[in-house]
Image 1 (cartoon, rainbow over the protein chains, first blue to last red):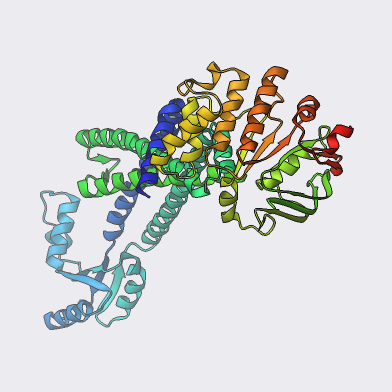
Image 2: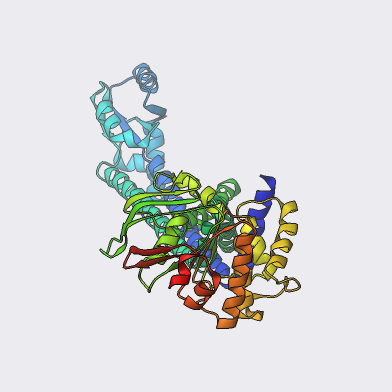
Length: 293
Length: 228
């Protein structure tokens, strides 16, 4: 068994060295495929990160009836906090709200309250949902509660944001799957060329009495090796390029870039695995037709 | 009995009838010529012996094993007991003589220890001692065919199949190869040789099976041949 394993590895390396032009072609093909795959993955991850941030910013403002006293407000807050779909309820008094409003309008030299005669704003709760997608339903339920006179969560805009985000996610997953399929096809074709160059040898091996697995193993090792080498090249390019991008900027069009090294290392390891797996799949697709003797 | 054909027919998917109702038996230790014009079915017959082709109808036995009922995973075992020699030699150009012969043992996972001595032994047997490190393109046609024969013998086959082994060689070289095959047969290996070379067949005094358009038209024992 050990003797055979040594033989398989020796044959795989001999074959890579002997057909070095084809090996380089295969490595380049895999490197380009993985590079495109990696860039798409980075783009998707950043977009998805951005959408998550946007979505988690979605909150419900619940405005309270004027006549509600302090005790009533306390009671209402406790009630809302006990709901399982709600993560956090923050009370914003009418005084705070007015101060905020004045700041938003600009610190003019007049006092907003005295201009208006009185503070027209109500007390309010700022409510954060556990899952931002539940916000529209929660808002409807909160509006029915006695003591709440109006809710606001950016109706219309929020629904649009959610559906856009869903679309972007679906499209990017489909895009990556299509890219991976294209990569498999391209790699299989290149590997088929490499195997085709050795079809006489395979035919002889079959006639002499090699088992199919004995013939396949060196090709699979070669496929994994070429896949790993190709993905390594693309990961180095990707890591250097993205790293230097991060050094220069940390956002693109208000979109913060992912910079966590654990996330990036995870991505690079996945791409390395993908390269090896693409090598195996490419070999598996290509070799069987040559074994049919 | 080493080889048995019972009512074997072969019709290819394009409708060509390659063999029609062929029945014959070949004993261990025999030397048999397969003769007949191109397209008579000689190649189909030899390919059936190592199961590159399967019959459309009929039964084939090699060493008492049915090739029709044989499972896919048993094919390598059958082929290890059969050595095949080709008209175009089918040597691997980037391997030396030694490596070409050793190849046959490596690809069935033979022991490293046995390999070296057996490879040198068969190279000597075919008369190529001293050429172990030559590459095929450095050899003459006859020498290349000797490498092909050495490779076919490396795994000590019961049966040696040679499909037009002298087809690409001049008459003198063909006679030398013929002598080598007869010598191998004398040492105990059954040999089946498909050929057009009537001169060689006549001189060898061995059994001759003649095919024409897929049918056996004559099967002459060594003695009968003198009558021709």
